[in-house]
Every structure is written in structure tokens, then in C-alpha cells.
Length: 265
Image (cartoon, rainbow, N blue to C red; front, side, top):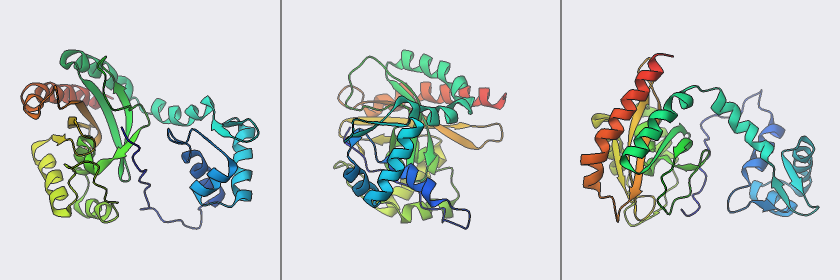
């Protein structure tokens, strides 16, 4: 999949307890990506908006802590950075509960299966079960995609209060990823309302040509939507009709199974 711009939440405004240096350190970490796996000092400064001196202090601090390594010119992340994400995953038992049903689902339908949560304007993948089929997407745990144009994103957005949903929509960057991408506010709200009403969402090639997916919510004991589950496939071998008629029932059954497991925790 082509690089998708990261949508960073700006809903929380800095207050008196805001630690700017810590925030800048996180920005430096986020500046590394698949398109920029290693960077010079100047490149980090340009990508983060920091001065060279400020970027240098943060890079050397992260290097001292073992989160970065350098050959003297280029900086790159080390495997230790995974500790930060693992702390989140290990603190959420939902993923241990969800993985076996997801593996069984992927085996039955022979399509990739994923779980994601909402973070600002993005969905973040927290669990993914691949099939052996070759797909154009290269998604893994930690991958981010724009929520308004993904099936899991619309399922998660559908669970938000109306005023919060509209606030996020108001600060949404508009980009036509494909000729199918829906950009109109009213149309986007209608798609999300439909997902809320029917309890699932299908997105047909809005984010990437040839990629279709269908998603359903995962609910906690209180009935709150805590994550979304989806099946994705390629349009040239999996039609929208097939998704609705054959794969959607399997997806809904698995989502209900995982939600029942969550209610026991």
C-alpha cells in the first residue's frame, strides 16, 4: 500500500503539566517510518520541525537509552523500540482472547483477518492474521490507516457520540486515495450512520484500488465498542456480494464469540 499520511490527534491541548521535551522526543521517534527507516540529523530536524541542535539532543538521548543506533551519520530505530508497543499489547488481555477465534476465521474464509482500535483520526492495527495469498497491502501490528476510509474505522467512529464524530470530521485532511474515495461530509456521515444501524461496515476500494473489506465491532462487558474486527480481500477474486453473503456471517459470528469472551473477563 502507498504511504498514508499519519493523522495525529490534536483534540488534547497542552496544559500546565505538558512536558514539551518529552513530546518532541516522541515526534522524533514517529519521524522514522517505512519510507524513512534511517535519517540524518538534518532530515530528522526537517521532518519534526525542530532545530538541528534540538533534534541532535533528542537523537543522542534516544541513542544512549538504546532506542536508536547510528553509524555516525545515519540514525535508525533499534528493536528496543518494540518494548513501547508491547507494553500496550501485554496490558490488554483482549488480544490473547481474540487471536484463536481470528485464526480460525482466517482459516475458514481464507482471507486476512485484523483487529484495530481508534486513535484520533486513525485506526491502529493491534492484531493481524495473514493468509498465504499475496496481497498489495503490507500491514502489521502498529500500522495506521485513516479511519474514515476503512471498514474498521467506520465501525469505530459509529460508536462515538455525534458531537465528537463531527469534531473529528471537521479536522479531517481530505485526500482522494482512489477514484472510489468518498470525501463529502454528508456522504461520510451517512456511511458511518449505516454502519451504526446495521452493526457492520463494508468499504469497497476507497483506500486502495482492488482492496475491499468488511468489519464488525468487538464489545466489552458494558456493551462499549472497544475494537473492530475485519476481513479483507482483493476485488478481483472476492466480490462485495461474496463478502456480504459468505464472509460477513462468519465475521459476525467470530465478533460475537470474541465479545462473549470479553464479557467473562
